Amino acid sequence: MDDFVSQVSGVSALAEPARRALYLYVAAQPEAVSRDQAAEGVDLPRHTAKFHLDKLVEEGLLDTEFRRLSGRRGPGAGRPTKLYRRSTRQVAVTLPPRHYDLAGQILARAVETAARDDIPVVEAVHRAAADCGRRFGAEERPREGGASRLDDIAAALAAQGYEPRVQDDVLVLANCPFHALAREHTSLVCGMNLHLITAMLDELDHTDVRAVLDPAPDRCCVTLT
View 1 (cartoon, rainbow, N blue to C red):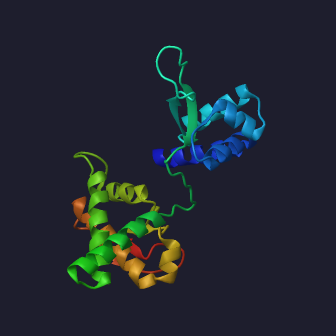
View 2 (view 1 turned 45 degrees about the vertical axis):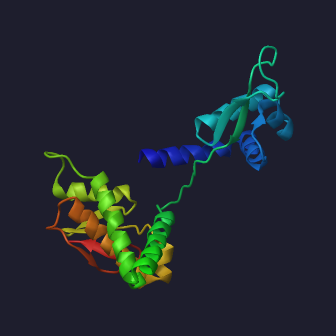
């Protein structure tokens, strides 16, 4: 949730027209730029540009560095100038949550494994998805004496964007983080989902709960019983 709030905050920072113009100007430059250069580039007063540039830094959209623009060193060289450049941080918000970057990582790793070990690609996808699920399970492993078993599982799945809901003692996943891919490549992506979630359950030590394929419109193809 904290990451989601951070992502939304970063995107919303660009809703202000002057701030958006400054971001686009800085991002388009081949080198880091000074406050004065940015202000001139978008025709803003320097004090206004400084305010918005520092807000963009605060939101993680710009990075700063200090450098003497004269190129001189030593006494009399003057103070270094604060320069702004686009941050390498990636900001993206999708509603409902989508994690196509994760799918890309799993599939890329699977292709590499299939080529290296001479195994079917689908098997390699299942292996890579299971590795990912174990990692997620380890990150979300509950503490002793914590929430109930179902709450533990739901929290772990919610953290990955699955939006779990309890319906008649079955945990239904209202969202598929790979929705568009699943529509086009249903068998491959649903199998990937199944192995990811099964491995997550194993890592959480909830082997009495089973992940099964149960496709239905407008939700993930996996349910938990």
